[in-house]
Amino acid sequence: MAEFRITQSLAYAAELQYEYEEGDQTDRARAWLLAGGSVRDSPGKWSEAGAALELRVLVSKTDEGNVAPFVSKVVRKPRLTSWGDRSLHATLAEFKLDPGTYKISVESLEPAPAFRSEPVGLLVTMAHRGK
Image 1 (cartoon, rainbow, N blue to C red):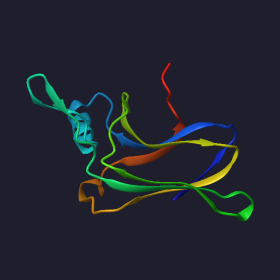
Image 2 (cartoon, one colour; image 1 turned 90 degrees about the vertical axis):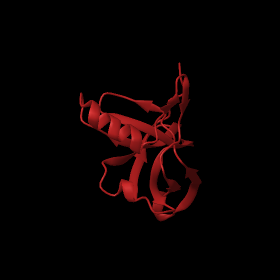
Image 3 (cartoon, rainbow, N blue to C red; image 1 turned 30 degrees about the vertical axis):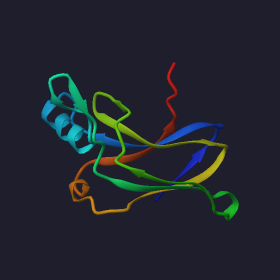
Image 4 (cartoon, rainbow, N blue to C red; image 1 turned 90 degrees about the horizontal axis):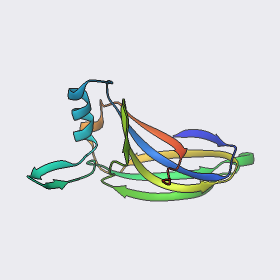
């Protein structure tokens, strides 16, 4: 569980972040497979299985000592939504938040042994809505 503070009313996203060593294609391929990124099944045919995860995402507003559940969502096989030089990202949920203090937790609903020793993080960031 993590606590965070919002200062602007905006759309935010909870994302998994799969880290890898910049410039290391072997490490990037490891992260890509862990995240369930698209793979070529045959010439011209690609599939994206998503990560082998089933997660419950809970977001609660915690202002003034009160805890009010805000978001509760089950996510099966989260799919990659963006990538960069050192990490891949999979959006778990998007939500509009007003200023205040919040808590977020992400719980695995089934065993996920492949993720036990992997550098996977959780971010709450402004939602990317395109241009």
